[in-house]
Image (cartoon, rainbow, N blue to C red; front, side):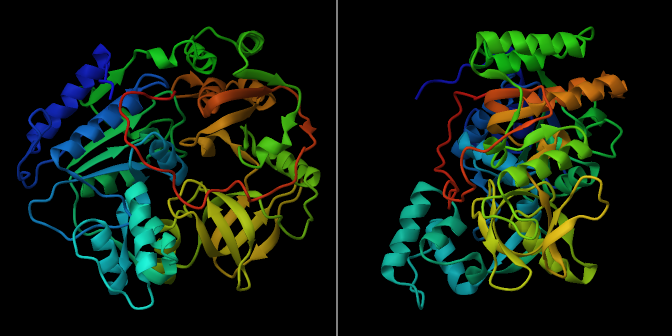
Length: 508
């Protein structure tokens, strides 16, 4: 395996985090662990723009902590508590953000899955202990030896308890009895996409993790309601480590070049759009399009600033796909808009959120459920993605205050259509190909608004552009191209991708 090559700022950040961990009883240099000091806590932030090596650093630290003997807590299963156990959790605000890390080999889970842990049926708990290497092979009534072999083979490829039990023919409702709020602290927490954290989540995490390291991009958009500030902005400079160098694998990337150009305080929207057009002539990874691509919208939403633009594009997308007004087609994208449940149903809320149906989650509609008001859904980025849930699906229409509701339980998870989303909601997500609706950014530039001293259109453009992994499509006209293929669900994976931790590289 190729050795990790750090830049000077990465090496300094690694050493600072290692010093923090040593003070908490984790010696990375010697791979030694000691009992943590009660009541001691520490928080650091690693900040840097796209391509500065945050994920590479996070992956390297994760690998070193695992080699030192820390046990990764994934959120889907926790083994028996041991007095000497030291733990690590790698967290992201959304399933999609966690899945981006998992695709890069980092065993990440969501903040919700750590705040709330599953309660397993006792007989299936024995299977989980066995799979995790903490018990002998069990005998379970109704589960064949072949099914257990399938579970074991799956777990050896992908270390996911729900995925392994699904390979044995079980569903989450078979082995998870409920969810409980975590009442015991863990050890070390790494939080990616920390720019998305609000103050309440930050406080909750500090209660659970005495050692907390935040990884975030200061150029992104702050959570709504926080006056343009991110949680790491309130930390002293001594607690913030800044990565400023753009790494070799990120150099000569026209998408990141455009994102970094936005730091120029004298850059106008017109000059920036001319830069996009010039990049498109020189590199196929950047394209200028006269129309929005309807086929791409089915899996990669077009990113907009204004809600009215979002609604117009969704209406055009559904019409182009031939979707009837009164029902959804399998394959239509949705965005979770929260959980509509009264307080007395708190347990059910926890259940839905822990399965990935949190505000901002991306979902693909699979079809109606077996009960009235239920829908079968694919939660994008979740380790156990297919769920059936009481759903309230809202289709907004231009000029109408009340949305049309093609599927309505009395209470449950609420969804909006997801063929177009606001750039705020796109934070934390990445797609291979991203369409950015340039007329909306022009409107933001004309509005003259700023956030934390930076023109809003530049923050919006930065976030939108950096959602693209391989190709950026800059759409300049308010038009929609007709789809070339019908909606389908055949492309959706049934399980999480294989995990293999790699710390040498970072895909920008």
